[in-house]
Amino acid sequence: MYILGKSVVFTLYGESHAPYIGGFLEGLPEGTEVNIGQIDEELALRKPSNGIGTPRTEPDEVEFLSGLENGRTTGEKIHFRIRNTNTDSSKYEMFNRTPRPGHADLPAIAKFRNHEIKGGNQFSGRLTASVVAAGSIARQFISEYGITVGAFTKSIGEVADGEDRSITDASNSRKNPTRASTKDLDSMMTKEIIEASEDGDSVGGVIECIATGLPIGFGGTWFESLDAEIAGAVFSIPACKGVEFGKGFRLAGMRGSESNDPFCFDNGIKVRSNNMGGILGGMSNGAPMVFRAAFKPTPSIGKEQDTVDLERMENAKIKIEGRHDPCIVPRAAIVVESITCLVIADQIRRDSLWNLKI
Image (cartoon, rainbow, N blue to C red; front, side):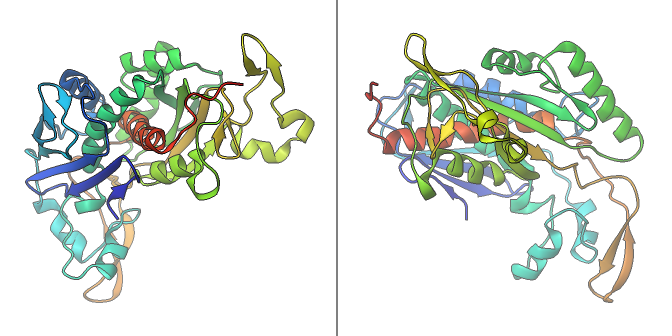
């Protein structure tokens, strides 16, 4: 349940209020250069921003226990962990009896014997810090193949970015707290988050991710399709409720003459449009890979909600206190990037077409 990949394998462990979260990363070739400073920079992008994020902050210092030596991989399994330092389990005890709507409390209590809710346990977004650490290492590996991955916030609530964006826009979004592609959109998205928070509520949004440098033919078919494996991995991120590639669901309203991306020669084979999001038959067609992931509003809100009392087996009310993000979308952008890098790294180690020329 906690393993991603077949050749580059990432294993996640820990709980939100345990002493540590961490992971194992194996399958990268010996001698791969790893910049620890870059890992720290990307973990900082996952931290909450003042005014639009939770007051809970963590130093997120990564401790490597094996697999790295003098800034390079040894070929052995990389083991790292991140200490949890700012936890408060006292406010979660009531949820073992009155599960929170929108959270995994109820199915987890039903499935796992002696399950106790402490900050979300293994279902918490806190574990995405480990995903970012592993994904940063994978990003550095795939950069050796000329592949770049970036993401930005496409929408938050009713505020949407209606322009087609590039990998440069995605990179520039790192300057903005909401991960919007422009300063103006960042201001509008910030206002949307603050208004929801002041109302004791939360808001969701959409993240767009772009990958460039994928050669024609890279990927797999059927159950090992590039888009299938990325979609599955992205869906594993807590709060993700939808993934679409290219024009996605809008393709259903088009005719083939509109949706097909015509080929042309322009210093190599190119496509004139990118309705398919750079993927055909599970493989890259050479265009930028583009997909979007929808994230639900944070389920922990200050408004009173209906639930059930599991001891009395009757209807009940609940009001959630504590420290919660009114919107997790800005923090999730780097997580989407990271998990995409892990999938691409895994497919690189399984793919033999890097020298394919057409």
